[in-house]
Length: 127
Image (spheres, rainbow, N blue to C red):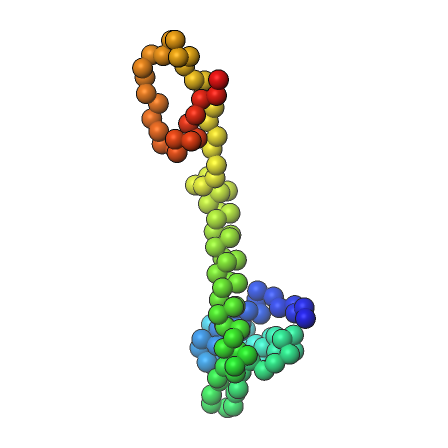
């Protein structure tokens, strides 16, 4: 079964799940309560199960909602982490640098040591 659930929908779901209130989640996300309810309904339709038991005062996760919550957290965390890594790369704070150097010939070695800031296997000279 293929479900189409967006990252925004997962954020809305988690907000309602954590705050246990459609009103508070709407305020936090700057979304009207009807729009928030519509988003939850779309997720429930896509999943094929109710995610919340709700009445006028209480909002509780159903078994399906409790199953989805850690999955949604993991997906959103991975997404944020991936873009954090990309931002570090773009800013030049991470990435891979390759340095090429010629190795001294055994007969003319000057005895100068090359600092080993990388693994020994990466510092081998090829003859």
